Length: 348
Image (cartoon, rainbow, N blue to C red; front, side, top):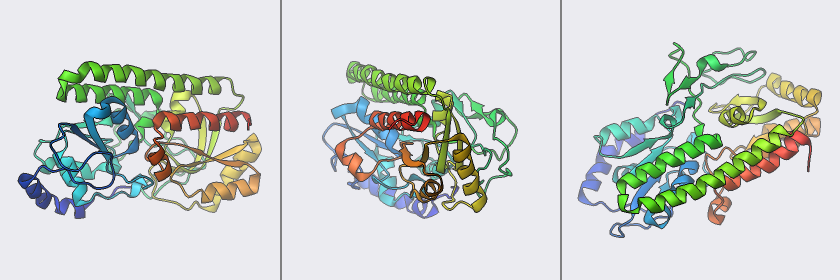
């Protein structure tokens, strides 16, 4: 989705004038931090759940960490409020992804006059892919593919978003955190930023980083083991596909109804038929959906094929139930591990 949130930006000057009168952090109900100032803690704001969890793992009790999304909110339809803009302008560190879906951030940061310390996740990872249209996929309204080919690697970018190709219209795949290796790189960068703000606790942050990287590495290795030992390497999504970094990392192939940031929610008959045919021909036991998806397309495909519907977690956000119970990125990847056992092997 390409919208820039002009309504929220129109409130920015008003918000900044409020900040000049008071540095009180607003209680927007979306984070774990206390309202107000004076507790001596760092204030960290993230747009999405994955970096929120990474920051919590590193900062621990030394920071108030909040995310702008409400638990259960679809990230692609998020629109910042004036309170959200105040939170960004008053925090010690703002962590965002930096893709097309967050173009609104550019205006907020420009209006802040460079006074907000930021970490852009797409700048941290080694490789940024363009969104691809694979065979059978229904391109979104901005797509230029006929759906019969792959976006391929010619449109990939390296070195934090510097495009290799000359296609100025190429859209980058934003979902960099879906790769566990990228999650490790982002978490390391978060630790460096936090330690730069609070150097007296750097040893503590480093200790937490080392412990968390071990957890991430363990789940990555477990997923890689399941994939390497499985007879199948193909996943079928009856949904958007925000998992390219995940499938690239683990050597998996996929078919899907839509690209990762598509505005579409209803697939045409040709797309649904294509996915049904693939499941039947390849004897695929599972059709996948995203955690925030309605599951309507996946349910329709399952009804025709007998495949089970399962969720693969992209970690944009979590349900309110998971948020309240403290399920983090590692826990969601452990769920993905169990889903892959069934999807690639037929194990229940």
